[in-house]
Image (tube, rainbow, N blue to C red; front, side, top):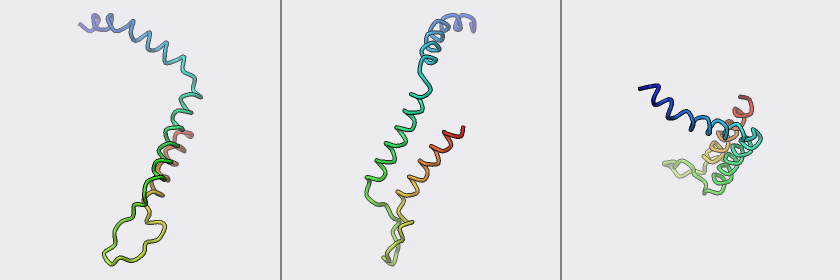
Length: 83
């Protein structure tokens, strides 16, 4: 049964492999960084999200959750460059 399924799927797999190796690596990197950049722009455009304090005191700039989201996106980009 395995050989029958393998024989049926082999032409499709060869076509997909030929298609994937034609995509240049710079295009894949540009797409990944473009997605991360678009997410960063979207996060910055959102209204500030700060945890509520029970006494209503003013929060510091580090309590804005958008900054941490941008930091996570930058870390993901850095890890993509390294690995």
